[in-house]
Amino acid sequence: MLSRRRLLQATALAATGTLGTAPTTDAAVRPTGGRRPNIVLILADDLGYGTLGAYGQKFVKTPHLDRLAAEGIRFTQGYSGAAVCAPSRASLLTGMDGGHARVRSNSMRETGVQPRFLPEDETLGKILKTAGYRTGAFGKWGFGNDAYFTPSPIGVTCDVTLPVTPGGGLQGGAPHNGGGVFTTSDRGDGSHPLQQGFDEFVGIVTTEAAFQYWPDYLWHGNRRVTLPGNAGESRGTYAPQVYKDATLDFIDRHAKEEFFVYFAPQLAHWPTQVPDTKAYDDQITWTEDMKRYASQITLLDTYVGQIVARLRKHGIADDTLLVFTADNGPTPNEHALVGSGGCTDADTPSPDSALADVLWNTNGGLRAGKHSLYEGGIRVPLIAWGPRVVRKDAPIVADRPWSSVDLLPTLADIAGITAPTDVDGISVRDWITGEKRASARPHPALYWERPKAQDQNVDGGPPSAVVYTTAMRAGKWKALRHAPGDDPAVPDAQAKFELYDLDSDPAETRDVALLQPDIAAALQRQMRQRHAPMPFKRKPYRPRRTGGELRLRGSR
Image (cartoon, rainbow, N blue to C red; front, side, top):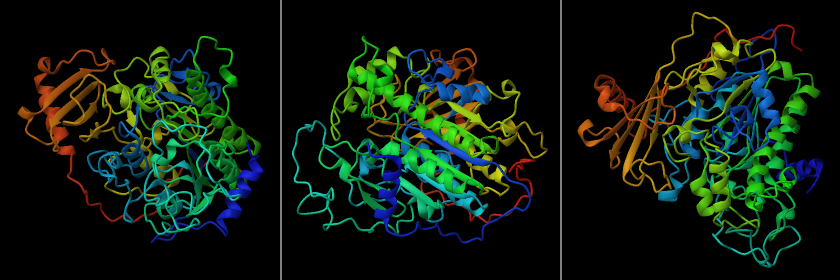
């Protein structure tokens, strides 16, 4: 493994020049006076509700996250914005749920077209940058174009010898399908992080690129940087470590400023690839795949611990709000199909890891997992931590349902800037801080969509290839509606409707739709109304200072 210093030097020097800044049409809104909290948002990949010790996990070690959950708020009914990665991340970054979001599916699976934002989309990066925060995104982005990326085939071998140049590229051409050297042909893509409000970015752009833990290159700002240590089948540079080191470096350089960090490594998405399995070498009954899978989760926990330690080193941990969550539930079905990877570029079936999800109860006893709108696919860990930011009476709010769709309006509220008026989420700032402001309002029903797709969902519902499924959470009631075809707003008589009382049946085993006809009819009506055909036309965003930002008295 390269050292942290050499990793950061390699990306910085190879990028040649300073990092670009994201354009904005409005001047930054900078409140005067005391310091607002720094914001660190950590997004795990395919991490089920029961994967952390704080949520009941007995086999996989997550001590750092467990401590944050004990010291902060461990929300027990936190949700992702969707059941798969691209729409979930789009909802988190824009505050739009599946009925209005720009991205509502992993479209590249069916169309080959990458999901993307448009210049008029307002992301967390744009809004917090406009509010005066320094902004950095590190890890998996998932939106926009990368002309050089080519997916690896399933089942390639590890002993292939490739004609690699000293610089790390393939002899006779660029590493993939370019003209000999890496260029910046995609730098004008309005969907990339720097064009969506982030001052700095180190990571991968497309979703498929995240399937490679030892990639040929990474993005640094708007430029691609080759990783010579990963030439051929070499494993010199582990991508999540680069993201983590870049995050620590960002904190080092901006510790005296108000900053927003979005740390989103692909851990623990398949393939199960990690630098080592030392944490679980004593598990003699586990297979190597199981050890690697558990090590991915524990490595993510270690990275979280290192980020908190760096905040403490600079004396700013008390002045920081850290939110940890996941983009969707666990993936035993995907592990069974393409979950392993004995070498850098191989995707091979991993029934061992699929079995581990079952044995370790990574969905926390909920129904189904990733791809599904049953609870196991969308209920995820959600932790808020910050010694001088987060309320001390956590039990009052810990069991309140809310979603990553609420993060944009919540963080905008904390920063003292208005959110776009058409977002679906609302601010839950008071739930986190314990303030009692007159502006707080009851949370509306949560809503999700899963368009018809070729996803491998095995949730016990209708096949995802033939139905457009929507879901709603209103109080204790959870409704699912499976509409045939591509239109979720078909008449009720054409759709299959289910209703569950999550207070008494969190595993969704008893459909009570026939016993509650009035509630069923009301929720069906609301679900049809929450869907807007694509593309949903956004309202213009005109940010303004609210004067109500969260100020930390006595902070540095």
